[in-house]
Image 1 (cartoon, rainbow, N blue to C red):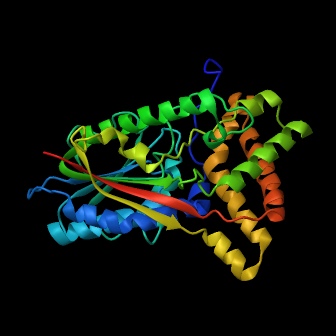
Image 2 (image 1 turned 30 degrees about the vertical axis):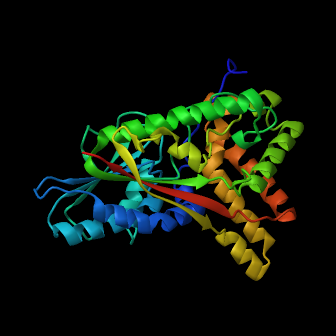
Image 3 (image 1 turned 120 degrees about the vertical axis):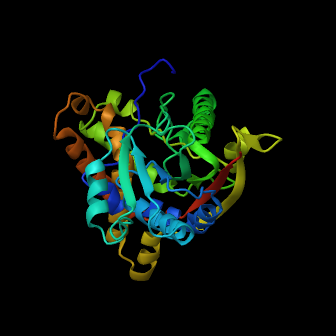
Length: 360
């Protein structure tokens, strides 16, 4: 199966859709803010006039980065005063919706740079599985929910599109790719960090039984895709090519590169925290009993985050037909809402926050 054509994962749905509907990653990032604030205070910053550099690895469309950047800048200002330049680099794939990111920076009331003329935001269109900033230039790195995505999809998954439903040799391929990518990610960030710098990574976690909290929405979406094949909306071949490159890791997987001496590429693990993230949409449903509202929120979350990674398997999308992506998203969203209304379930999940320190 490894020699079959496998897709690369897409970026989040454009035109600001991710900003509107990706509430769950924002909630996970919020749980990580205390450790992020501590990391900012601990980061070593020279007493000179050179810019302090913050790297936002996997920024997507920017809205979920605003509060973490606010926290960092506020704490840095307490240490450095009002005039020290601070450069913030938002990093994502070239096809990311950077227009929405810059709109957020320019118009949102919680934008971190609105009232601070010595903060300089910019964007880099490059995968964080490559070098994105000069060696030894980054004081603080932030990466929220982005490193769950692999650099490539290693193989197809019979009968489903998520790695949790893979077994045997297929699962081994995903585990191997995930381990390689994690070491590559850490090695690149270690190269870019300054000595005394800090990197905070926030990731969805797996429970002890291997569950993630997203099983229901993923299984319902898989059933919708099967219906679309039966209805002729997509072909069986297109469906078979659909795979998500997202692969949650356990704590032991994240700590594996550090081995017995607790060091990897001059990085050490300074903090590690596991938190429970409750599904706000489910909490609203328990109060008001509105199944339609719950289904809509969950379906739009799925569409904005995962649909763009499934759509490139469609021949019409590959051919560049302008309406094919929207039509696929609309049909998938409609079918998913219908199924979720009939089978409501929460998306409570676990979040891992890891703080890395760069040694001298």
